[in-house]
Length: 107
Figure (cartoon, rainbow, N blue to C red):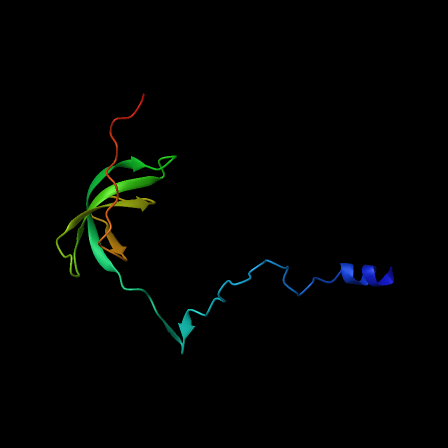
């Protein structure tokens, strides 16, 4: 009984079975004092198409790619957060385009 009372105040340091099994261990983002970022391409907001998402929290926009192999291409993208025409976005990829908004809504 005394052992149970002593162990109640201490946390178990052994992982619970099934928890984090097979999950890769996270490595530090910094190697040798340098931070590495993924490559991104700049794009400017040309037009705001409309709001989407279950609660309208996402804005669908049309943006023009400013650099990279798809330079000059206009894409439809979904953006979360405040956005206005003329803003510059940094896109990780420029190949995938968002689906077109369905304008036939039930009232």
